[in-house]
Image (cartoon, rainbow, N blue to C red):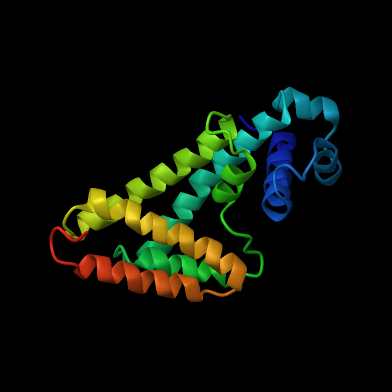
Length: 185
């Protein structure tokens, strides 16, 4: 059962990591902002790395729930993933993808944080594949990674442009993938 201190630590760390980056945020800053003591921190998390992993695992669940909810609100079709992203890109607190950001900061593919972030991308790919399959598109296993690549590219471009436009352009490209003749995917 999570304690209030653990939840405050995770909430604070998630906010700070997303805004400033994992490496830029130290334990002292998390303790100060969360108003949780050092002993309590180490009772819940043996290290900052353990906190990073816990934050990413929780964020993975929440983000995928959000995506499924927003895709359903936009009609449930595979292209709706881009409509959901456009909404996210329009928010003032948009700072890119926490998982892409983490993979950049924790570049070692064997690091626990990198593995959690890569796992998130694999689960998103599986979700997109399920959307494509449910909609009756041919070869969803080949299309899904392409959709996710477009999603990731749109995320990075939206961070640079500060606009939902990249999601709209990625949606247009994804639509052409769905219309491509067999064997051209």
